[in-house]
Amino acid sequence: MDTYTYTIGNKIYVNLTNRCSNDCEFCVRRTDAFKEIGLWLEHEPTAEEVINSFENLDAAEEVVFCGYGEPMYRLGVMLEVAEYVKGKGKPTRVNTNGQAALILGEGVPEKLCGKLDTVNVSLNATTAKGYQELCHSEFGEKAFYAMLDFAKECKKYVPKVVFSIVDVVGEEEIARARDIAAAVGVDLRVRRYVR
Image (cartoon, rainbow, N blue to C red; front, side, top):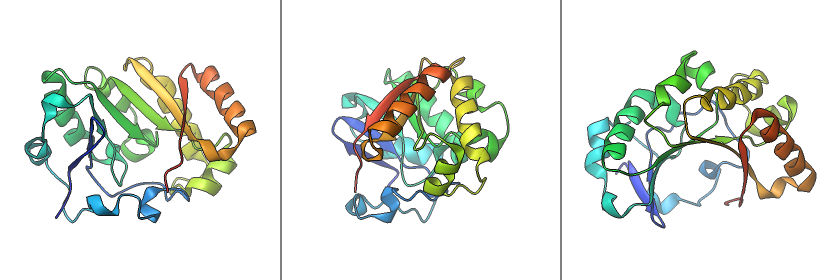
């Protein structure tokens, strides 16, 4: 059975698609980390199906668009669900690879205005070459630059924009990531690597 929403801690996560423009070496899709949740989808949900699958939304600290794929592929559904969630007074976040302009064309950050409280962009590496070696984007090295531009543009429309990088990349890479985040004007979150 398709899992459209799932809870970890006091956050509800929304799984909209399995499509992604990346095939990252470290992706949880390559592991059994969330196997028991059943995030591989046979059917991509409508906004109504997602909304109907919410359990205990009132108790949620945050609703996060993050599953086994890139949420921006389902931008319309994501925004409709986010609007519903915001109407219930709950904060919203998307975890994204930042390649929305390459996937959908220009103008995506503006559409997020008023719908999302946080955009979390997976930085993953600090050079275009390193990013491509790790993430294997279908867009090649230009994915790295599109991701940086996306984060910069999101700052105009979304209250909080964050780059994230996994803790296993080493201190030098994390230091370079901090410099990149500072140059773009966003925060950096160093997150634990999940196997």
